[in-house]
Image (cartoon, rainbow, N blue to C red; front, side):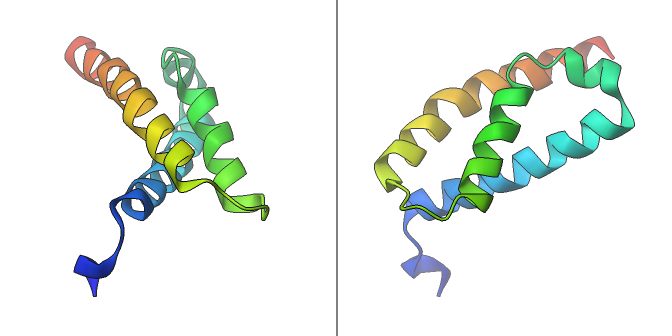
Length: 83
């Protein structure tokens, strides 16, 4: 079954999980959340994907995930190295 899932939908699922996790970080540690440059953007993107029921362009989601996810990962890695 998993082999039949398009790569774009895997990215969509990951974006949703990341946005949800960042919401938890925001509530538990606002100071840490404020140090993640693209956290708000990732959360807003997650909310759009999860709650906006208008059609979603798979290619746009995949493109955003590929470009912005790398930036978010760099932010998180730098925080892990500091803390």
